[in-house]
Amino acid sequence: MPTDVSTTLNAIKDLQEHTCTAGADGSWSFTGNLVNTSDKAKIYTVAVAVTVGAAVQGHTLITETVPAGKSAEVSAKNFAKTTGSTGQCEPVVSAKDAS
Image 1 (cartoon, one colour):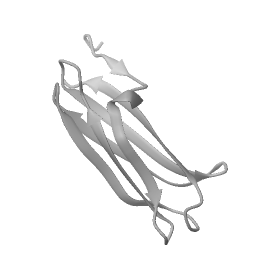
Image 2 (cartoon, one colour):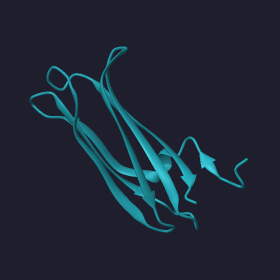
Image 3 (cartoon, one colour):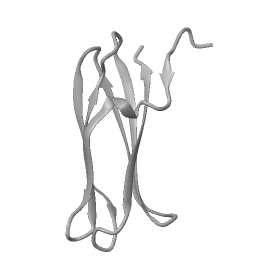
């Protein structure tokens, strides 16, 4: 059994200044800044998906370890493709203590 591993399944508050946009050719890119305000290093997982209606057009998974009190930029380029800029893009963030 793991000993005292803290996991936060909804850590979206730690993802700041994030954008997810499509270029003129319909290629989607994501950028954001993970901010760890805790006193422990955290391993963040950022899942980003682009959907049109119920259909997923592309997705990416970013894993980043951020030391206590620090921040880290994260990005994914051209991870999804749609017709023009049609679509919706939402990140989901989880965090757990780094061992």
